[in-house]
Amino acid sequence: MSKGFVVVGVDVPETSGDAVRWAAQTASLHGRALKLVHAVEGVAGLPSGVVQADDNSTRDVLRDNTDALSTLEQAVAAVHEEFPELELVPLEVVGDNVKSLLAHEEDALLVVGTGHRSTLSEMVLGSTSLGVAMHASSPVAVVPPGSRRDEEAHGVLAVAVDGSADSALAARVACYEARTRGARVLAINTWALEVVDGFVVTESDQEEFGAIQERQRELTERALVSARRDYPDVDIEVQVVHARAVPTLLGASQNADVLVLGSRGLGGFAGKLLGSVSQRVLRGSACPVIVVKAADR
Image (cartoon, rainbow, N blue to C red; front, side):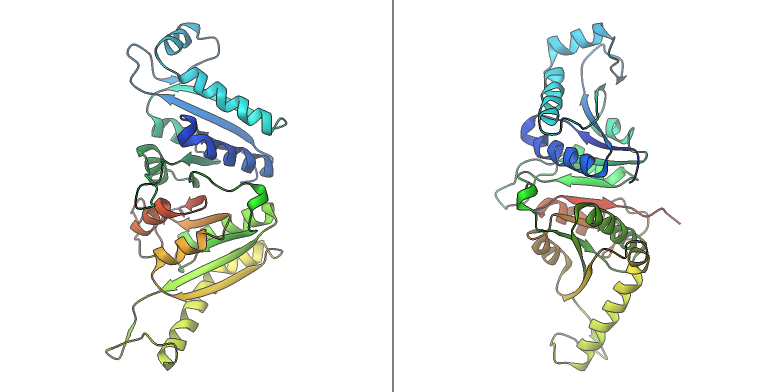
């Protein structure tokens, strides 16, 4: 992520305002330009694709029939006011929201916002945020409403590590972000149900319990080898937890600035677009979640 863009989807301020600000802050930290992509669907008679600056006829149709131009202009103005030195590339697009963002994913971090929280305190993942997280090959950051600002930062990036290729990549991304943000990394490994010689291991004073804890720690350390080698200046703490993955990670998100997940780790399988654990964490996380995918082998 040392070059290229941060790309953020722009919608009405209620659903993308926090994502736009987080994307701008991240682009500023990494010294990258920020692309603001606003897609408009369902406008009859308009050709699909990026609306060029000199395409006055398309812009007139959008101005007369939608709030598209003003929505993008408001986002650009808000970012420019807070980050005046940041290079901005605003793009108005006629077409599908998900496809419009995926078209700019090469060498980029894609950023999307979410909807409101439901009565069950879980975020409503819109079709755009879920679709981008599922189908992108590049890292995707899903930013919940009310994400904390700089002065509220904890100085911790949490990452789920289970020994998979995805989680090893997630650890590298977490370390890269931590180094940039001057934070430390908390690498979390979870295990829930283990049966040894026909007995379920549940008590911490059981000999088998300690053996499982050590096995999981070794598994985690193997996945961290590359991250530790390439980011020796980043403090990495390993935490092995006997508990279910989702509540453990959601608890960690309360005290983390960013949570990084491998999309197919934690019980996922190769070829699956986005694991159930990842989807549930995205819906309940208190902090932005970066989802990464290792290249298929």
